[in-house]
Each structure stands twice: as structure tokens, then as C-alpha cells.
Image (cartoon, rainbow, N blue to C red; front, side, top):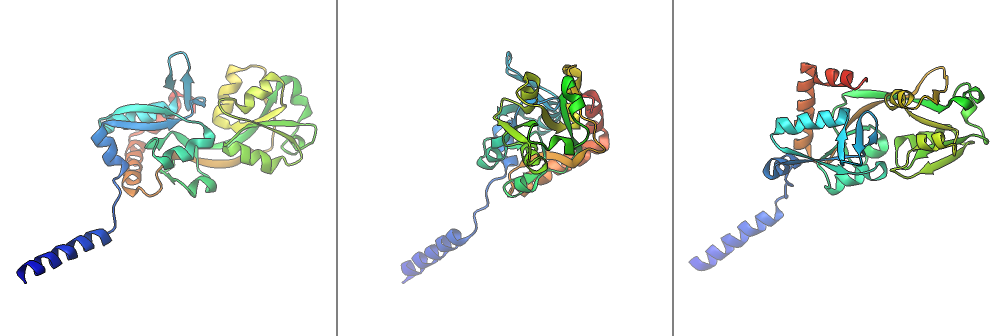
Length: 258
């Protein structure tokens, strides 16, 4: 009888353990135990993240932000190459713990979590100087004889399709970029953030911003994280708040001309 009671009690404990919800380990625990912070970055958004193919190294605003985050965590920093169409999938699949800067969008919110925002962008249209006279405002771009280039998987692609339904939309896949199609003459117009746009105008003198009455789609920027990992999200948000108070984000933005 005593043995029966012991077996019954053991089975009851086992059953309760099986019925208890399993709590997944936070990315924060994984980072601290492995000693590595894995960051997904595209390396094609100047001046946020720019990859040097010769050295496979990265520079930019995002890179400085993530370097400081890894330093404060006391771990090594590993950049994981990704592209815009797989950016969300990579963080959902656990290929990296966090991403560099990404615009906050309803589509991305369905699958991934976001940190607090620390910078914002707005969208402007660009063309080459020899075509600038063809355009006067946003509506002039929405015409069947205008080729608008955009990169697959970006928020720009969605905006291009929404804003210019009558235009000839040319979608390229990363690492190709919409602005490269315009520079090559294969397209007439591309849109991008005011942040990247100012950098491209400095780098390519033959580019020109199309005059518009106002920029479109002001959008907060943040880091993508696993949606269900509130421990990691809380840590990153508190880290952002702390470094905003210290002026770190402001001085880093000034360094990169943002």
C-alpha cells in the first residue's frame, strides 16, 4: 500500500509538470550565456548600415548603436547579413537576436516585436538631374510613362505601389537598390528616406530631389526583436531610455549627419 501511494504521488507530480506551461528562455539569457549578441543588418542603408565587401565589415549609425549595446551587455558583437525581404523572418526564426534600424509598419508588427523608437524618417522622391524638369510634385510621378524603381521587401515597395498605381513599377531584389536603377537609366524615379536621400545627394552629384509640397509617411524607426520575448524587449527599451537621457543617440546622429 505504501509503495502504491508513492507511485501515485510520483505520477501526480509528473502530470503536474507536464501540464505546467513551458517558459521559453529569453534571448537575453542566450546572449549572456553564449557571450555573443547577433544583430541582423542589411548593410545597404547609408548612413545607417553600410557593408564594405572587401573587408566584410560594417560602419554606420546602426553599427555604433549596436556596438554600444554589446559593450554594455559585456558580450561580443556578431553581424548577421540579411536583406529587407527576410529581415522579419530572420528575427522570428532566431537567426539573430535583434535587427538594426527598421521602420515600424503594421505588416511587420504582425510577426515581430519592436523596441522603443529613437529616430524617425520621412519619404521623398528623387530622380537624375537631367530628368528633374519632368516632375513637379508627387502627382507628376504617377504616370504610365514614368518608371519608378524600388527594392523588394522594403516599406518603400509598398508605398510605391500605393502612391503610383499608374506608373511603371520596377522591383529589384537586394542587394540591388532602387536608386541604382535610376542612376543606370533603367528607371526615372525612386523614393527613399530623407536620411538616405541626403547621403545619396552628396555621393552622386547627378541625383536630384524632386520638389514636393511636403514629405510623405513620417515614420518612427526602431529595432526588431522576437515578438513574444518581453524580457529582452524590456531590457532593450530600458537601455534606449538610459542612453537617450545620456545624449548618446543625439551625438551619434550628429556624427552621421542625421
